[in-house]
Image: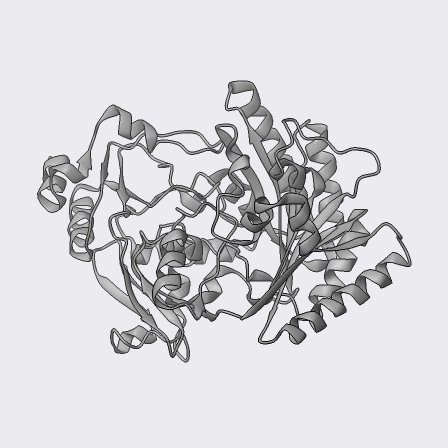
Length: 473
């Protein structure tokens, strides 16, 4: 009966209950347990989504929103049996670009590849911000999951770039939040209003389905330069990062263990550290309206590196010209996002991480302690640290790529569990939080916060049909 009703809404060709498709949607690259939906439906309009949610409420059928599933957190795997996945890929229009207020209004199926190509063709003086993710990743999903990007060191998490949105509530009602409440051509910002973007940001699809989102764009700077810092030791590395980030001159800074850099260069598995190598490499980006402005910013970085050398002479700053001569075209792919430069991470069918946002005081300790845990479980060292929002905090994670067999999955689970315990001990907050991580977090945080989440969830979703089980709710 449910399948027939869904077919009447979107057409037979956009509803599937085949074994093969249900299997594909039942899992992702992570170690999280698979769970098959009973069907997949692909709407193309707001009205179709409203009709689907009406059917779901009438039949008490669980709904899981999905776009590409590229979240490395098991976030689109159903948590309860008898769920239906709503795949939003068909809703892929860039509806509006406002040159003056610098925003784009997009549907959830718009990817970073779409956004880059469209802006380059039609608005070449504007740019969006791009994450270290495949070009087919959803722009809206990344913003809702509060992810990071190539402007995060300057501006913060991607949720901070949201001006407003339109969403279908679990009950089927259509709402708007942000300045778009005054009309289609008015998506300039979120303030001064009650900031209801928070009813959808970070909720992992539990509070409704976002159908439009207004996202801030930025002027494309005429001059951009990159450089690489090669450093030794966790505390010296993070001290250098802190001093440079506090200067407020960086667009972005990605600190990676050197083994991760070697992996991206194509060194065969397993990638190991060699004696005498730097421990970390940090890719930095600076931009400006003139070449002189960029060179002045780089000179500030050079001064800080010279200061660091007084304590550790091996610390090194390398220009991107030198990197390009060594790496050729591959160097361009690293800085020209969105790209497939990081496809090496998907060499195996398993990919996971424990990702957190963390206080600056814990950066060095977090890198050092996490490194010991990963090495004890005999995984490759793929540490990543990004100062964010002018160094107010950082994104910190350890990435693991692995063949998905029973032994490796269990080893990954134990390693990730220990990494998260260690991160929580240091005051870090996990992001893109899988259910198992949410359980650990809830054991430590203010119980009134969880009580408030439950009250909001019940108010918005009285039949508990929207992605139940996420955040362990």
